Length: 325
Image (cartoon, rainbow, N blue to C red):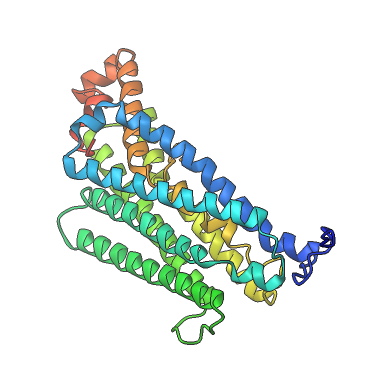
């Protein structure tokens, strides 16, 4: 009769210390759980968007783009759920097994970058419509598209290096190391988000001032413009800073995976300017515009003097701005 296995001693599979395992896995579990929570929020906001008149007015091309983003979000969330289950039950707990992970882990940064880039392209094109038809619009588009390309390149390097580690190959065959690639990817992503939010806020402010919108409506619309991609930028910068901290501390087990807690939910954070990334960012923005318009309509009756002076109400001013909603 076979001897009863000793479940207290995984023969042949020495485990990492509790401190090392916590430092390596905790950021991953935090990132995956936040990502899945934000995914539920994204779906809720997307449903709200589908029920609005904004969805009806959108072109087939825009609808297809948004549905494509949701499809990619579903894929990334399913992958995160798989990773959460895998690392939650997998019994090979050596330091090397945890760090090298398994092959699906290399897909996550690439999918994340593509989802984020898709949203950033749509937001860049939408924000560019506010710029005058001169060198400023061209410069805005060139800078953003260049940064988007750099971000995709960095994320692809991160995924490729992850696969090299998984299969026991050195990463010196690629132009960047894992951490350098992550820094390039996240800072480029943050740069695009900051450019979108800042550029949109400046141009919307100018248009609102030209249209005579002031006071509460003015502040609300400017705030919405600034929030367009600010949440993603915070996640991206946080991840890049975590990478720099890991390098500064010599890649200790407590810091080596800290960036995952930031970039894993990064592509969902854009989805909530009103807290929501990634991706229903667009519908959430459009719903925000709609709600602001409704509020300004309610205030129209209390602003009769202002209406006579400006000849039209704040809500009509918003519609006249051609905000694309």
